[in-house]
Structures are given as C-alpha cells and as structure tokens.
Image 1: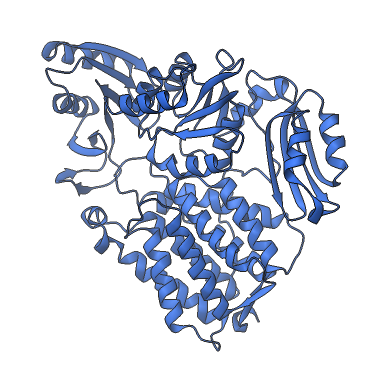
Image 2 (image 1 turned 135 degrees about the horizontal axis):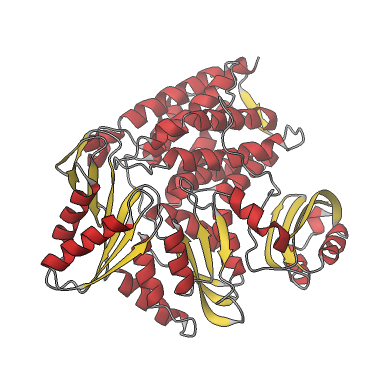
Length: 548
C-alpha cells in the first residue's frame, strides 16, 4: 500500500498534488475569510486554489507517467502560468523548488523528499524581495526544519505526511505570535492556512482517502483555453500543442522567430517534448503547417476573434481589453492596467491605457493574463499598473517571461494611484522619464475606501462591528460607523485639509449618485476645493475617494 511505501514516483506525486489541490479548493472560502482586514474582498483562498487547480487540471490530462521529474515540471509550469495574487505566486514558487530538486529523478526516497522540501523553502524565500515571518514562508520553513530533524530511512509515506500535516499546523497556528497584525485581529496567516490545507489533502491521499472537490466550482480553462477576449482584433486566435519529433534538436528561438512572421500576440511554452503555441493570425493554416513540421498535433483550437468577442467576454472572470483607440502604431511606451469596475475601466481607456485587464469580482489576474496583456501592446517599453499590492508578484513573474520588450512595474497600490500615474504618462517620452514621473505622481494622491465589515474585531485600536461600515485611509482602518455615508464623511474629515485641491469620489455598486452628491455637499460646506463624482461601478466598496 502507498501509506507503507518509502518513496514516491511521478504517479504518486501527481495524485498527491490533485488531492492537495482539491482540499485547498474545498477550503478556499474559509481561507478567504481569514483576511486580516475585515472587508468582503478577502481572496487568498481563491488565489491559491486557482493556482493549484491549474496544475491539477494539467495533471488530469497528462498521460500516465511514473517519471517524477516530468510530472513535477508540469506542476511547476502550470502553477506559475495560473498563479494569482501574491499567495498564489509564492505557492507556485514552492512547487518550482520541488521541481528543481526532482529535475533528474524518476523517484525519490523519503529522505530525498526532505531535500525537496528544503529546495521548495529556498525557492519560496528567494521569490520575495523582503521576506516576512509569520506568513506562508514561515510555515513551509518550519515544516521543513521539523521534517529534517525527524525523518529517517525507515519513515513511511504515511508517517512522513502525517508529520508534515502536524508540523505545518503548529507553524501556522504560531503565526500570530510572529506578526502583530495577526495577533491583534485574532486570525492565523491565510497563506499559511492555504499551505496547511494543501498538505492535509496530500496526507489524505496517502492514507487512502483522496480528497474530491465537494461541489462544482467555477470552471477552470484546460491547457488550451476555451475562450479569450479579442475586442478590437480581427483574424483567428490559434492555439496548438505538438509533441516534438526531435525535442533535443528543437531550437525554440528559431521557432519563435519564424512563426512570428505569421502571427502576433505570441505565447510559446516548452515543456520537454511538448510545446504550446498561442497566436493571433489572419492565416491560421500557415501557423499550423509550420508547427506540424516539428511534430504531431495533440490539440488544436482556432477561433474567429471578431465573432467570439462578446460571448467570450461574458463568460470570463478576467479579460484583457485592448484599447483600439490608442493601440494603433508603434510608439515608445505603452500601458497595461489592472482594473475592477466599469467606471474605472472606462476612465483608463479615456486616459490612454493600451490594454486593461478587467478583473472579476473575486479574481486577481493570473500570470498568463498579465503576460498576454503585455504582449498585446505595440511598444518596446511597457508599463504595468497593478493597482493592487496583491498583484505585484504576479506582475513581476509575467515581466520575467517577456524577452522582446522592456517591462516596468509601477507599484500602484490602488486604482486611484493608477489613475494619477497614467495622467502623468506620455507614450512618446522615453521610459526613464515615464518611470520617474509616474512613481512620483502616484504618491501625490491619498486613497480613501469605505466598505462593510464582515466580522467583529479590533484593528489599529478601532473597534469594528460586523455589518457596520469601516473607513480606510491609505491602507489603514481609521473608523467604524453605522452608515456608509457617515463613514465616508469621517474619512473626508480625516484626509482633507486646507491644502487639498481636488477630491474625486468613485461610488460603487452598493452606493448611488445621490449618495455621492450628499458627500459633495458636505465637502462644499467645509472645504474650498474641486470635487468630481464618477460612477466607478466597483463591487464591495461603497466609495473610493482620491485626495490631491
């Protein structure tokens, strides 16, 4: 039986990943609720489960193989391409670390599996510019340290994963002692909890109870996507996977150079003898004929972009909207922006963003979403506005996969900062000027937010009651009120002063224009500044308010 085994091969590893991913999916709502801020857009569980499911989906379509190196490479690649949010990117890097150690191995013993955990820990820490303890990083590190102390050559897989489950649980439960903010709010780290759920699912498989998804969740695209958004484009979105005839002789650079004659928006991913190609072309036959010279097709998709556009957009959580008004012709610099809410998206179009990643209500964009958006911009230098700190790592990973453009990440933490940054942007200026000016200007606006509290807690000395309304200024909770208008007025009182020149109010789905007008009247009574009202149409946040 597997539980008495003392080694794992590709088949066992594949099943471990699928069971772990399923358990993470089953617990994603609980993990989302561990968000430090008591606001309704907690997304760690969603981000991590989507990242893990990208790998699980790929494994389910993978032909049976016992080669551990091959399976771990598939897991690593698909987790990275599907990674969402900072927690998802870190999870993908943990499994990249496993893949690095497993790279030349058909199977590993339990002692070697500990070394795999050590490689995973090292890669996870390296992926973060400033590692913080009391997070998922601590959980993987402390779990690994305990395994290194207690695993020996007699340890069975059952005992190994029982220890991993227990050690990760202890490490996660201790995170509030390492991070004051967790201790103050009374929750454990949500990323660490996600990792515990994954390891727990692995243990369930080993003891003979592989985890199944409890209910049908939102569908995840297969290796070749089922839909894509092509607003403003013509021709065919063509994708295919081929099994290379001579993988050892395959020259990916030469392949890319030649196929670029037929298509643009190219994304080419090689995994040993398999290669996936995505491109937009007027003549899909040319792409396919060239691809077939290198091997046999495993899968093909070619869709008319014009006819598919509207239906595709309706069915996606995240879509890349090409701004065809500004994206024509080569220019020095271009902009990709991540936005939520039709009002913000329209504003970004108006201000000249080349491509906008339209984020779903609970979906941060994946690395692939950002990668495709960057590739769609006809400019040598492309600036990415994440407009959310939880998108930073995914943006950085996407940028690392682009070789024919210079990609610059402007660290905008809010959509309001993003708007200020793009106002300062000039597509005909050089990249250094744009980089310096956007980073300077984004700091000149303060961001206020009003939303409903989802649980009772105390944060930054503010007593918060569930279903009341909290005001947040530059990422810090400053008050809790019984109505969202009172919360907004308190926010304005704290943020505005005699030097304030412009206040911009973006009202969301749960507020109305008359509500915003009441705030305008309040501002006009007490402050001498310009006020603008825009229907942001954003979910979760009644108001997003910019102060300049």
